[in-house]
Length: 334
Image (cartoon, rainbow, N blue to C red; front, side, top):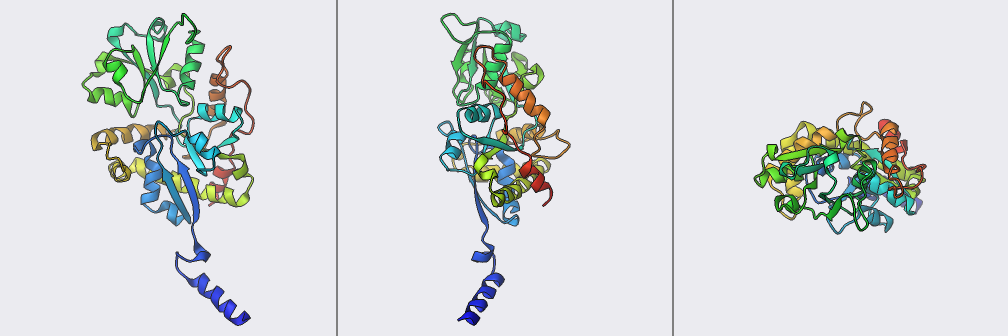
């Protein structure tokens, strides 16, 4: 019996990739939004086999207006999520122990885009106007900015009226708002594609206004980081993801085709995704340590902005252990 058992073990060890001995580690990634070039690096890593080469079987779950990544991971529906740091830190303060393990976007792509015919040429002109804002976690940078400007956004007589903006640009096109939230890689170009001209628009980039907070980062839980085997799996994932993003930035046309192939809705267009890919590639630039490294200075800046909300800050206390370089360091050694 022992002889046959040993032969069986040898056979399993020599078997191909489908064997139990070499089964890939499963990992589920929950995106913050729908399939688009904002997430090109993940789809490229999947399509080009970077995850497979790392010994991973990665499932990428698209997001949407009714999907909150923090709720998904809290319920055990994902191992890693893509989220903005304001949302992640606010969720952490509410009791979900999220930890940033990798920062993909080094710069903010968020903007307020205004109609010039509304008479807005600087942030001091916001007062008295209606401003469109996304919620579901995206409102935090905006609220922090308004607090810095000392503009009230609630009450019976607010300085600015906040319009809960849908995920479209209709409020600006239809003059329901003087300004709306846009991303450098998405909604701004939707306005252009809808017929508006750049000279008709006044753009305020959060990055240039000194109120930029960190956007697309990778988050897991404290429990996951307490397990060495999980850390090893996450390190493989982070390294393969960085490779996917690097490839996407260098081969943008191919990356767009990969994104479109993964868009099961068929809603995305090649023209828009090509523009988006070019703009997104600019956001992953900057970190000398490489794609995925979270700069402590950027973390501190984000926290400072989120705590500067006067009587209603986004977070009320300095977060501790909210990010970790453990996975990045382990990935660097692979």
